[in-house]
Length: 211
Image (cartoon, rainbow, N blue to C red; front, side, top):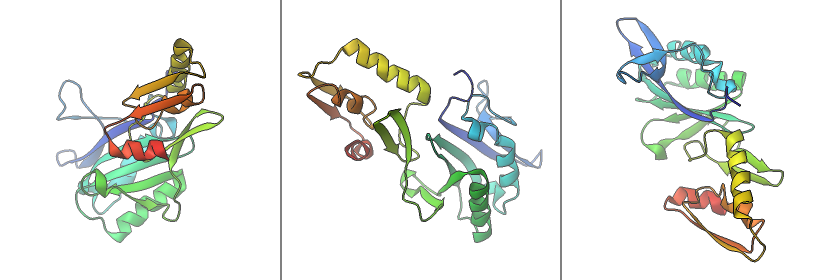
């Protein structure tokens, strides 16, 4: 899959006084101070990549359109999360608009007023469901937006299969998986050998792997 494969991205948002408009896009390679305005993105998951213009219209309609600095996109198999980096507290009206956008287009909506620990979901509120991706019929990896995952889900599945083939694991084998993260390799290996020990320095990732 060469198009619409990317499951994670950070889209920059900036209000430009000279143009009197909000720009939504990616930083230019030659000059990161400038934003390359785009109407769509052909490598980002299509559920978001084809709606860049709608995101721009949404932000321009907000009272606090100057206060949105970034949209972090994280896509699972079933759901897509959008984290809006807000530089100041948003009004109830603005939050309602974001929630309505999420409901209309099928996005989970989060706000991030500070560091990573401030990420809070505002739509849907009642669901405790997490994002997830499937490695096989019996291995589903659950994760939160902001967690590290491989950006190309299809290629990730092929990569795991290739690793399994090269390792040729036997039922008596014991495996040490360094930097195991969510368990992307650990869990498939654990179904084929006696034991897998995963080592990871990020406490959040260890919690997810244990889950």
